[in-house]
Each structure stands twice: as C-alpha cells, then as structure tokens.
Length: 168
Image: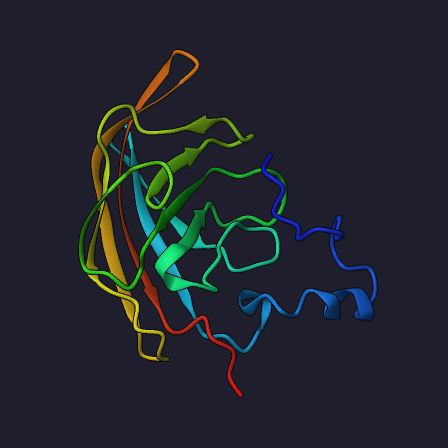
C-alpha cells in the first residue's frame, strides 16, 4: 500500500507524546468539522465512499490549491478501496488531468492502482472557501481506467462540507 505516515512516524501513535508530534497536520484535529462523501460508480455499480480525514489517509488540505482528497470504503482495517483526487479545490470549472497538479486514481481493495486510460477531468461546481460553511462539490465524468490488463469504467460525484482549518 501507499505509506501516508509522516517521516519518522511508523504505525499508530503509541504514546501521548508521539500523538502530539503529529498534531501539525490540520486534518488530525478532532475539532475540525470537515466531512464529505463521494458516490463512486464503477462499471455501473454505485457505492458511497467517505472522505478520509484520519492519519492513515492521503487527504491533504494544507494548501487547498494543491489539495489531495481521499474517499474510501468506510472501514478502519485493511487496505480498502478508495479514490484519490489531486486538484485545486479553490478554482471553479474544469481541471484536466495532467498527472502532476491534477490527478485521479482509483485504488482497488488490496491496493492495485487504476489510473485513467485517456483524457480525464475534475469538474468543480462549488469551490472550497476555507470557512466553516464551505461547500466543495464536483465530479469526475465517466472515464475508462486500466491496470495490468484489467479494465473498468469510473465516474464519481463528491461533496465536502466545512473547513479543514484548526479553530483557535
């Protein structure tokens, strides 16, 4: 799987001191009200994935113009299916995937990566504002994805409410 632990931290915090060492990540603060979900349609079958905001997810909102949002099957154990989106959450409109600033990847249960095969875009219908009432909404229109001879069709809509900023 993909390691999301910060440098020098392996595994869950084993002591309050170690837990405090990771508090500089704003998505770890339990007071942060941001929450969200994505409706993932894979080969015509739709499932709801929840926004991952824990230590073990790839969600990163320190710089909303270079955000990574990870939506995953709601389970705590194992290596669940998930979708990772990288894009500018503050900009409305179409953002074409380039593999650097804008990226989309479906990660199957167990960790197999399925990137888009051909052009892909993220459409932002409501941009992230940073405030407590912020509403980020968008979609990835239907796109073929491929990995090791396995082909699927992916489409999704997503919605994130609230702020990722720590409260004073």
